[in-house]
Length: 233
Length: 360
Image 1: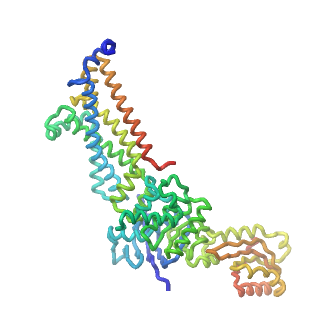
Image 2: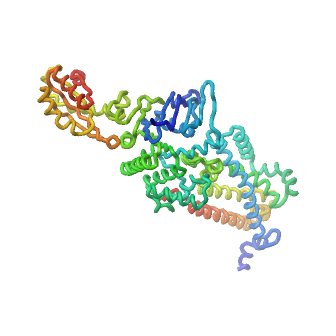
Image 3: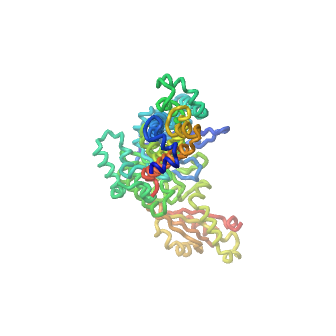
């Protein structure tokens, strides 16, 4: 088997499983970058997304100043192309993490790159909660935190799972780009060991692995969203 | 005797559109007494929903005074400007239950959790909250559905859950915003019966807004008719229904339609060769069947007036049958006048329509 594989895909086999450039190492790095930046970017994005809804005009905590601050920050970061953000944010990364290279260094720019995207997705998801539910909860004397957690976030939960899935998938794409500037992971493998060394077999396998990752995320997201929703019979 | 539990004075609500301000509620003053069912009727866009939302300040008025159960929640005019604090308002709102056209239940929570949600800030222990929620579900007849999600229930059932939720904090007031408008006729009757029952048993004051006249006919004690943000007519239900003053009120309660129908059904041949002076069309409204039964015979014998019934209808206003009858009276003017006087004397309301107008 291995013999046959090293015949058809010599470069793929040459990289090996482990080691600095091994397949498992790069899969691990991709997962590491995706999950941690999803956590950091997700928390910040969620806060911004909720803020954009509650501080908005006629929102439950209407506040023009805070809304404008949130809105401008999200818009500005959303406008910077990720590949430029990577370079632009390098000094900040150096200050926070102590290095500009490797998966951990990439977390800073990945988190910054993904949060505005997620914030807009969250904003759209919880805006879709029927205003009538908010009104009904208010008529029962609900507090702002009741409204946020029990009405907005809970009622939009399956929609939130859907947008989280979309965000995770686009984040996997961003990690590949971060790989290009030395963050490691499958993107790095595809470009540094595949494309740059004319090893098409490596590029192909790396691409397939990213694809499998995306499909897994998509399918589990869909299943979770379905399981969470009670709004249809 | 009766004390107002809701007191709205000179309420104005303006919505600022891009260029022009739209007045949704215009200088409305409204008192609702404790234990009453007060119907507010009017076409959509008349400002009914906006007006009732002022009661629990879901809608802040532009000016006016909102007083509920003796507490001023909002007052703004040339000299005063005050408003209840956010925390006090939340407490106050728990004393004012509200139900909606589209139920507005939380769809990701079970029926039981929906009712418990209303009790979250009630200082009760978890066990007591659950017990109370189950008692409320029993009251609306849905305790066996407590673990269902709203989407698994029919519209009528969802509205009953919403009522249980609205009653969770023992409110003294219940606002019903078109609560039966999205329901089928059978569920509508059930919900109205339930509202009547809780009004009677719990002494709840109910403000019912609707465009369905059938709904107010069944339950309201008093009604107010709204048009373009103003209350154009108000009073006791039976009074307003039997003596509508404004054109719009007549239109809403169908008097206009009935008159048109009567004129349409009028036997043209029978009156064609009669002089305009010799007959008239009258609209009789009465409560209690026994009054009108012998009417034709009496009028003929006593006053020499011939009565032909064009059509009649019996309606129920809050349990009281109210009959309406369109008849032509034939005879000379003097006899007809005597007949009409007699009818009024026995308690029948008479609207006379001159034959000339009817034919024209």
